[in-house]
Image (cartoon, protein in one colour):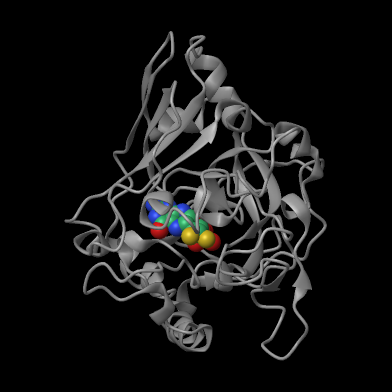
Length: 321
Ligand code: MTE
């Protein structure tokens, strides 16, 4: 992620470690973790490794909502991350998110609902059958991955709390704890990290309340214990480590929109025809597959999820970027 104006003496995303350096760190980490990694043929035979230290999370694969893409390796998906609460470097979350305590963990569901809920993470896990779905995740920075996520449609939770007629939007607030998250001391973003969706987007069957990936509970650096995945939007809409879900009548403020409103809109649908003010969004590099010297692959409208187009009929997507 990139911020246009240096507001503080903080490292900018443009100073973020290049991928090669992140990867060399990854190799270092992999070396350290080698003894705890085991081959697995459980869900994705293509996966070379899975951590044996994380808890397995059985889930039924949902073929209807799974892309045909080759899954990104677990090693790439867990060492090349954006999670600014742990630092702005792509390798920082893997290095520092180990300090995040994910039990006990409580999620509040409140605001414009008839039946507000305060849920422990283990109760949340039992709220609906867990599914596995291979989704593409396209970052606004121009890279992408394909990850077998585990979770259930957010719509299942929304149904339980019964939104009132005033509920038009859903706001996600994530943990901001200085004691556990070294990046929160930096003023690179306004904390806590918040994101939002329109209620119909939140209710779309593709919107996944996510608790695991690659057959296991979420690694901390990927947003443990619970995050959202909205696969047709740029990755920053997919808030990690959520503590509150609030239904509102007005459009919620969101961290990236507050940081750079001209660059990061509320909708942030993946759209190859609407460039970021400083770079094209027409193509992308798939992490682990496309090298710096290979031709980048074309970015697809709505990240290749055309079924969401009807949510935006009649809207000018250049204006509502
Ligand atoms: N959630 C929080 N709380 N903090 C963050 O910095 N980064 C976002 C999103 N969710 C972020 C976040 C961005 S920019 C991206 S691209 C995705 O998480 C990356 O998810 P991944 O690391 O699982 O690939």
